[in-house]
Image (cartoon, rainbow, N blue to C red; front, side, top):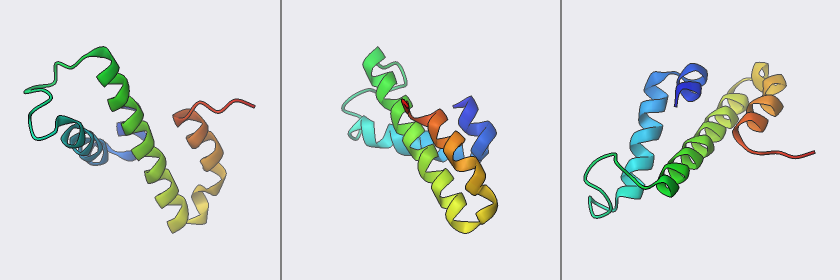
Length: 82
């Protein structure tokens, strides 16, 4: 979340986290608070990484100045093997 906050801004990371937790919570039936199982933490992190990729794509679609950053940004978010 720190990386996302630095790269996308805290308002964006807050929105990403809230959206992810809302989807995974199933209207409060899965967990009442943020104490979740380790595999659930991995799901949350993967969802946040995915949302960050979407944010980068949106930025690049709006302005060509981000084109040169895209390969590195996306590579950092997903495990790309050459």
